Length: 100
Image (cartoon, one colour):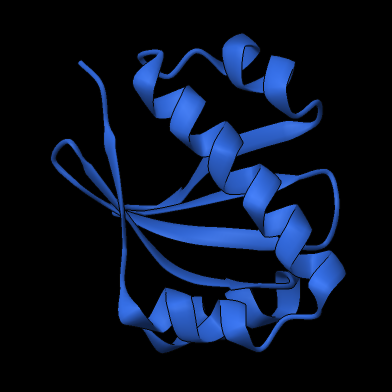
C-alpha cells in the first residue's frame, strides 16, 4: 500500500529559512521520500536515488527522514498520508518534539 506525501505550511516556511545548499539537500531528500513511499516503502529503491537516505520512527505518529547529514525532515503519519511538518537540523527537530 503506497503512502502519499503532503506538506504543511509550517514545512514550507521552514524551507524558506534555509540556504541554497540546504534547500538542495532537502530537495534530494523529498525526491527519495517520494520514491520510498511509491515503492511500498522499499529503502533500497530510495537509496538508488540518494545513497545514505533513511526513514525512521521517532515516536508515534512522528517519523524522521534524512540523508546522513545534519538536515532532517519530520513527518507525521495519518493512515496512508505522510505530512511533512518541519525541516531543520537535529537540534531543531529535538526542540519540536519536546513541544508536542
